[in-house]
Length: 394
Figure 1 (tube, helix red, strand yellow):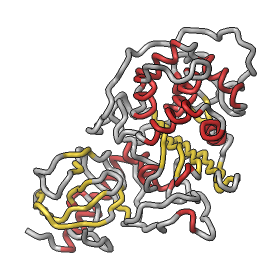
Figure 2 (spheres, rainbow, N blue to C red):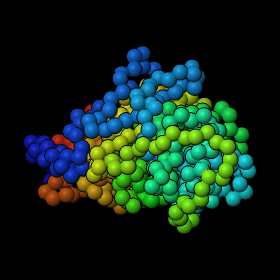
Figure 3 (tube, rainbow, N blue to C red):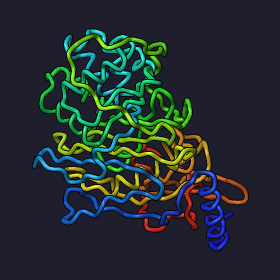
């Protein structure tokens, strides 16, 4: 049966309150449209950081050679998986691209932790970071704290240094190395090897072309993303190797927060990799992945990114766990992935399809999510009506 509008409004308000309690989400507007071309804005708004979030931001326009955004750009954050860029570059510094690139591909495309740990141990652990600081002239990067020598994700890294890493890759790295790394980042999988959704930040907000290396830490050992394209390729190990004795520049001591959850999006956006984007965030301990994902997306939507085309559509909150994104508009359509619980998602259009029931409610409208290339039932979207307001029919 179709729901009475007042009952749906009351239901939506209740769901929003439950979502806020369960997932730590602040109450957003029902939707917020964005301009189609981020580079066309005459006056860029200030970077908006959601409440409770600590952020470091740098956006560099390679065409003009200038920064369009800088916020706490030199602040050190624990790198999480963004350090895999340095692990990859160090592994190819003297020998070039290996004949067997399996570990590098898995580490860069699907953020495979076992592949990273294998290379970390093989190439000297913390010495990798020390060498790369000297080679690239990094100023805020440092190895993991002495108490955690094998924890490569505790490497200290800043947004500004991340821009320097990408500038080296794009402007100075040997072509074969550049092609491997950037090629892998353009093929970033929907799900990481550990089952966490990698489509936050840059890939959610911007249409292709983009290339990304994401980072996350503190959300548990594994997620529930169901489209993992790459599986583990090596066995986890603890790094025990010491520095190799080369003459290197002394790195500054790491002073990174290892308690709060971390979620970072980095990479390039636009034709010809016009803009380099680095956004690092720390969010309060216990923040759910879906809430952290939403906070990061909201921040990225406020950035001035020349050459970037913002995905058209409207943003809505969602509720429930295990919510499927499907290839079509029926419950029999193939499942593409599951949404992170409570995440805010972009809807570009909607259409009627199979009826979904969550007693006492029913809904036969389905929303198209462009970042996933599939549909979800509108019944799991926090909106008072079955048909979403302001969203065109597909």
